[in-house]
Image (cartoon, rainbow, N blue to C red):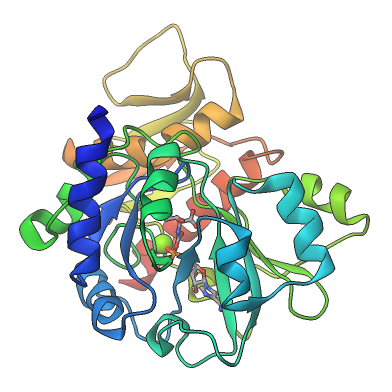
Length: 314
Ligand code: TXA
Ligand code: MG
């Protein structure tokens, strides 16, 4: 038996019995349950302390499985061919006879769907008779988990099993595109919008801070380490942790680096670990130097901006 097969077998037993488990994806860890089982899906909301009005992303093994639950548009097929599996989530029309639990969608007629690139997670999905609802494996409004220890820190003994797939390669959540009606981006993420635009051949509306919220992940105060954070800082004040985009010669105790060489992909991968590390070291506030607003820097700035709302909202 290959070493991973016993891990997958164990994961499957928990899922078949309507439990929630931690799963690795290339973006962040997910808190997964059978998307066809209301009993299982309700446990996700409870564990995450997530409002029932906030619908979940469903992860499929392949397009054949997806066809049972959703109506596939031409724009979807174009994007799927180019970017899936990968860090992109599509909002599609739900079929009337789909088996997806109404708790997944909050009774909506749309469904968020994703195909993950993580090979261990793909192998698990391939063994199951149902797709997996899996939001990020963190308590609502907090920083997402990018390794098994983070998931344990969030949920402790409350979840039965975590499928260990190492550290997440992208480290930041998927980009969400709404494909119902005129395509629009609902959340910036691990796939750059410019790449999506190139494939579709037209400019896509970016709707990440609408007055009427479509995705609750669009709300301010999200991705928060639970301490105050300020952006575009030139330097740090007393007792503040200082996050820098690239390594400096003068290593001070309160300096934290997102990358060695100003690499925005590496910075995105390290962002959440860095925020958790700072919190665990006991800092009460964070200053972050200006992050270039290009490529994945746009997603990093989006997350930092939402995290920066912590102080004002308390
Ligand atoms: O990378 C990711 O997307 C990770 C991994 C685990 O796949 N998942 C993730 O899930 O970030 P979550 O639940 O933390 O964020 C999903 C976002 C939420 O903001 C939710 O409101 C939105 O997707 N969403 C889910 N279903 C939707 C729908 N039908 N229409 C609009 N937004 C939806
Ligand atoms: Mg989340």
